[in-house]
Length: 229
Image (cartoon, rainbow, N blue to C red; front, top):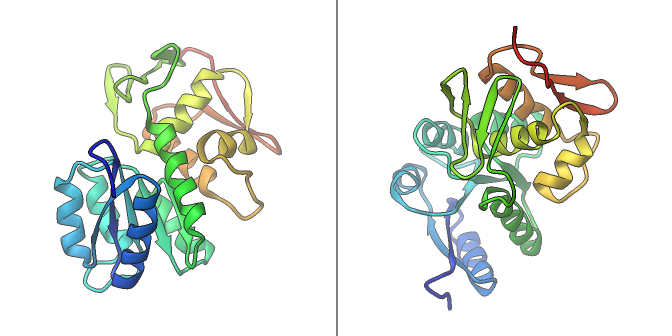
């Protein structure tokens, strides 16, 4: 049973049995779960439903998860965790490029899935402390999760916003990849995990100025505290 205050999730996966098992487990963890087994129907529901997070399969007939996510990201920034049986690095990067916040290979431990969901939801919760931060000509507002640069609104995914916020709140200091992974995902970075690097690459493309986010070789990243000339 789930209460009216339960956090709402949407699971889009063509494996009906898996959806049933995941729904049963997550509802025992006090989530409210809606499922759909079709990519096109899932996209329609994702665009209209007021849910806190979406669990999205990659391999589906009609419309795969990558295509669905790209269409969703053109309209909404609802956090998405991709569930994929395809473990190749290129497939994971494709999911991140499409706008995924995290990914979990199948088969997965349901307790790890619940932990990943909570980690993403913690990141998108209302933050404590100073809401507005300005550095290097960029301003972020944590209360509205909006970013502006020279009065130009910058559209970021939820994970891109969170990485930028961590870097800007530590402006002028080096933030390691492990620090970012622990802060955003509550786990250590691995040698094969390119998720942070992919998201930082996206951020650089969206922000004007190539030197705002510096790569500190062998250490991590640093947001430049210098104001633009």
